[in-house]
Length: 72
Image (cartoon, rainbow, N blue to C red; front, side):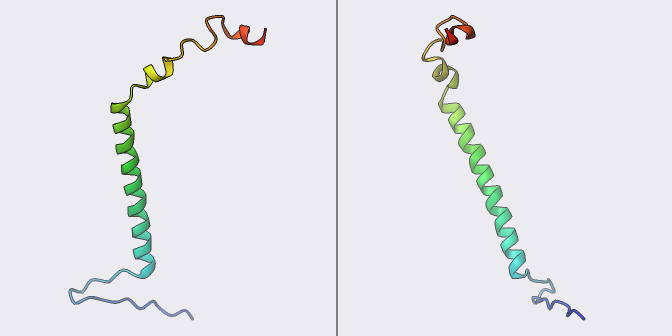
């Protein structure tokens, strides 16, 4: 028969987190933090760079001849 897990109860009567639960919460917090940093970095880059100008800097890629001219 399996033993019941023993939990540590603090003086206020709350059950303390196990090691696995602490690791799980830390992992979730890390993932949320990285996602937030990614969103912030994306917004900052979007504000600093105008990608339309960067992509159009070289002119038309096929010099106006259309797709068929690449194969001639």
